[in-house]
Length: 122
Image (cartoon, rainbow, N blue to C red; front, side, top):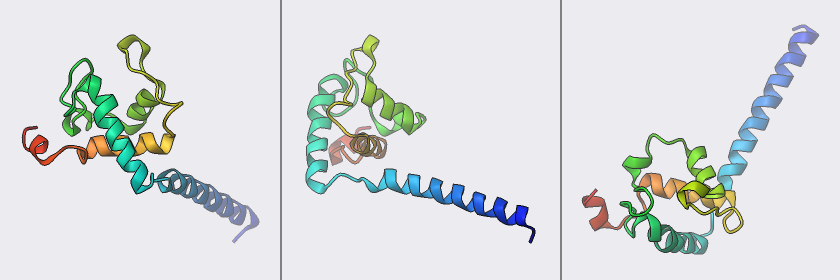
């Protein structure tokens, strides 16, 4: 192998390694079980006050898995994080961490927050 090729390979390995580490770090910050319970309560009570207690819509749009499936996670995360002033959506970035918001988005997209009766009625 030539020196140029070795350097090129080493740089590629470092870039890929850095990308993998960044992805791992962002997904490693899963909230504790206790915090997950608090976040689920917040989701149902605070978010539910506009989006409906069963997330089927109200003042705000429905937040059911089928309604969110085509929306990239980063858009949902940014909407929760920074809000939408023109739509009365508050910003939560002073209250929730990015990891907590990512966890909530995963919960919403998976429908895990729904009760059994709510899942059947979707």
